[in-house]
Length: 280
Image (cartoon, one colour):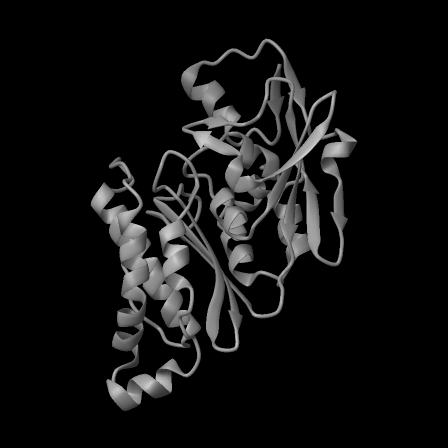
């Protein structure tokens, strides 16, 4: 049977590729897949919970994530598309997975025999391939709540701002202690066959100071933006060195690499309280 959530992706496959669905199981009224629970540390959303419901629940906790969700198609699409469907299709350009991976989200898989929990970045194996076994479904997704010192940004670059598929989606999740980055998780969509962490970039972010840049730059360089660019160019280079994206009608490989690196510079600019022009 085909497991159908909101149909915002599978419906396209049915219409465009003349797929045949001899048997369909709709998850929208499966009570266990519609559950939303909350603890002091996490939200857990059943796989059939819609993005609009997630947006309402998360609210202003992650402003950058909320902005991304509002760009998931139209209001009608957000009221149909589900978090489980967005993950389960295993698209390399799905909007949700890069942000969820960077946040350290976990996914619960269930079969008639047992359940198991894995990190979302371990779910994807190759293009449209996952660790999901033939008798398993995605039961729920757990998203950590913000903690002290956390800075999260996610940016989707596409040909249209609204209702368009990503060319590149970059997500950065940092923990700052004192004035230095002590932990970093970075993930990208549109840069590989799967949504993927940028581990070289994560390493290059560690130890960077994020406070008082403006004052230092004015005193030493007289130009805040250029100082930020120098600090973060190594992060941009790390991103560009560990991906080999494809060229397609959304953008060339060179364009994707340039944009992905520029998002790191944009991250530094925002943390420093500056505004910097980036390719988008």
